[in-house]
Length: 303
Image 1 (cartoon, rainbow, N blue to C red):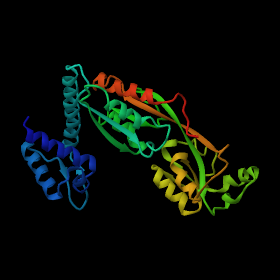
Image 2 (cartoon, rainbow, N blue to C red; image 1 turned 60 degrees about the vertical axis):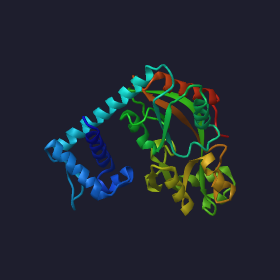
Image 3 (tube, rainbow, N blue to C red; image 1 turned 90 degrees about the vertical axis):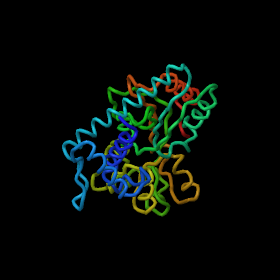
């Protein structure tokens, strides 16, 4: 297979994963007309149509679906070959792709920054580190699809193909906007009575643990991103849980209020996850994991 054909397959994969030509422009850093021309070239080389595009939207043909699965396998094999070839040199080399949850680096308990620094200081280390931020709901899928080698996030549902290692506990606190009716209730018993009727925003990746006994009529929204939850809470009539380190600037400015922080909190487990039987060289992956273990305080918790 020529370099040109590999390049066209990369374009095809980007288009499929972006859901069309428009979405792929930012990924490939080229215009829609160039992408259209490259897709036409690929279809001409293959001899069949890969997708339908037009006013009705982007849709893969049956052959396009089948080729996409083959393309994923092809690039996984290429990545595995590159990694194993690097491993033969018996040093730290190749590429290590890390995916992590947004807004965790600012947490004092998060070992990621110190781990990256310690890993890069290793002697004879020529490993290239790729870092990418994911929404929690996409993080484990990226790991299983071999787009990343190590994931750091919140994993309530466990997959048999993945190994998990607890890193630290993130303290989440219940907050509301200053001026919300609950913010002015100083008595904890009165606050506990008023809370069930308050409008709530829930983070989807925490499952039901935030409000296990809530009235569905009080659930304003289920959000997949912390920033989206924060926006709704700051907008006025919602309460919700946020990581304490993330909410701290708004609390310090008096824009958010913690509600019964000594009682209404969650300690959310942040873990590292790797694929079982991963093709990534053990010398790179496990050296980085050792760096994280060295930077992690056992059962550390954001105060």
